[in-house]
Amino acid sequence: LNKNAYIQVALCSTSFCTSAKTAFMLIMKNFARFGTMAVLGNIIRFIGMAFIVTATTVLGYFILVLLHPSASPTFPVLIYASTAYVVAKLYMNVYGLASDTALQCFIAVEEQGIDPSIVPSELRSFVDNKGKKQKAAAGKESSVSPE
Image 1 (tube, rainbow, N blue to C red):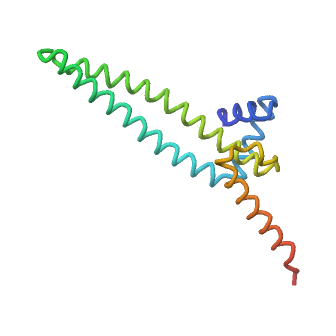
Image 2: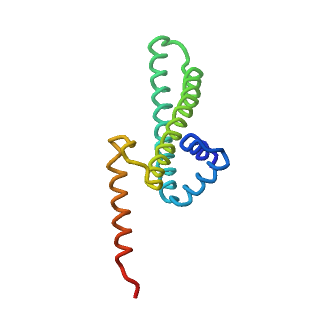
Image 3: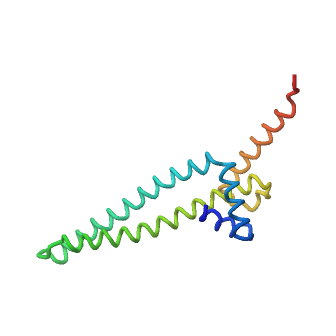
């Protein structure tokens, strides 16, 4: 909730407590979306971290062996791996914050009826499609007469 509250502070320019309440309500209304994004985001972060650590460690090992063939690679490779882990963790945290922010922006445009012209053209079709589906569903509900 803390991270989402700060995202709302940046999006809406409101106080932290107001933003925390808004973020909480947004999460509760869109629980499935946030849950799906959390699971997918964690999978992508894990894959990204594994790739960064593995690539850095393997590349460091080969460079070490080429430059110093007589040196024992154990300690330097452990240093490469630990440094790569820290860098990967920092990099993937930025990715996670960016994906959470993008999700909240997308939902804010949908729910608050913000003009879709401010949405980047690559994402506009998602907002337009969702808006059309919601309007169609609302039209069907109003045309059904109670029995």
